[in-house]
Every structure is written in structure tokens, then in C-alpha cells.
Image (cartoon, rainbow, N blue to C red):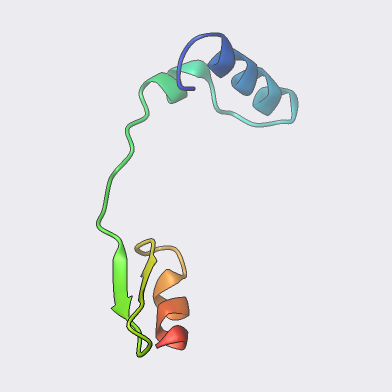
Length: 64
């Protein structure tokens, strides 16, 4: 995904629509892995969500 023919096609599509991402951006990208948010619900289930800046914290509070 981040290098080779697929990455070239992705960048071409992005740039043809006014985007500025290039192949170097994709090859040097490193994901930051963070622990999931976790809330135990009353029905013995556990709900998980992605950490901020996503809105999962609000969604989990509503579920609780």
C-alpha cells in the first residue's frame, strides 16, 4: 500500500484532484499505535473505541 505500483496510482489520483500527497509521503509514513478506549457496559459487554482526536470517547460515554 505504501510503496510500489499501488502507491504510485494512489498518489496520481490524489494529485489529479488537487491533492499534495506524493510517493515519498507514503513511503515515510509510520502509524502511531495507541491503546483503544474501553468501557464496560451494564450488560456485561465491553465497548471499544479509537482514542482522541476521534469522537469515540463521546460515543462511549453515551453508551455507558
